[in-house]
Image (cartoon, rainbow, N blue to C red; front, side, top):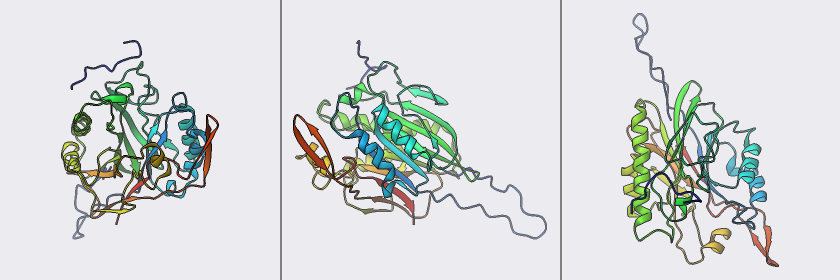
Length: 327
């Protein structure tokens, strides 16, 4: 079904190389272009749901522990999803600022701190979009875009994507961080996939309009809600204009309802899926070999109580982190 805009309210990367334009003087050969920056990009769905709606999921504890986790360190860019809870997400970002000092606001929380806002943003939508980008490299420009198309619970949030331009040692790198439509019982049969397709096409159209030079890298990272082994994966690559990873390593599933303690509790009958990706845009510079690695994160046990019952978990989110890197 096609949803009208604006959304309902409660009341109703990379390189911008300066390629040498002229040959060197004399008989010297022309200067070669510098190689594209070999970035390491982390995407992580943090499951930091609003404590107003989900008060017993240890958001404050997990927000404090995530920046300490080994997988969180040594990246150039970190893209987070489901950073919904305001205080928990603010605490996580603050703790990460020493390593990743250049940060965007959370998509859809407000228009403050963005150079531009596009799409179907609404200040009266109940929930923000939960996406934020953290970088070790200076951010030259940051824009947010809120998807017009959504169904189920996503209809009540400003989900979309963040677009940033980074200065990596003088070279421009473009990064899109997103969280696509979830497969939700509130969506009709086939509707969630249709919404994702429209969202991926929105990313592609947005980037087309930027007229980014072909010698600059463009990465798209996030929880795409598309299994890497499904037929929809090929459609996603086409719709968003992406190139699949050359290798997918590490744990077989980024959303594992058998081995991840939180996912197993929340979705015991759901299949294991591989939903999170860090991919390059087609037609732009990219490494010769690009890998996505699913990190099977495990934390020290932590316990929460609800209605007199204790629940103990050994993971920091219901998704595993995924890193993208060259080589």
